[in-house]
Length: 200
Image (cartoon, rainbow, N blue to C red):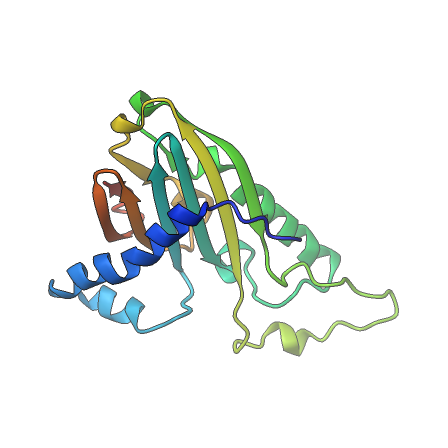
């Protein structure tokens, strides 16, 4: 599947700057054991990444989740069941309205979505080809799903934050590292099923 870039140049630059600005701000705070653990791993099961940028009435969201939390495995699909699981994961990630809750007063509606499963779709199995189940259990492989959302907000000044309802759709996701930037400022937070709201 071809990934369609949805983030504008200005928004992409803004998100890049968060890495220096928000991270530097966070480094001045004492870190919890959970933060120390998650920040030490580039790829961690149960831990995803969320980038949010608001420019005028345009809201851009980029979500990255480990494949293991979306479909239960990380190797390219090599069976009908595997392909069905990947397509099901794409469908669930495509339903942005069920993954994010916006303040009603902001009037935000997701207008465009693109989901990139990376190499997870695989190439299928020939009917005479045997599937290597040992490879399925290879825990050295890591893969992610990336989802891109573009929304329009009728009253962006009322967008005080976003609640992540995606924890119900993907119950093994236990932490989302979020970065955000709006006209009000920028910041970062770690969201969990018990603390699912990102406040701007």
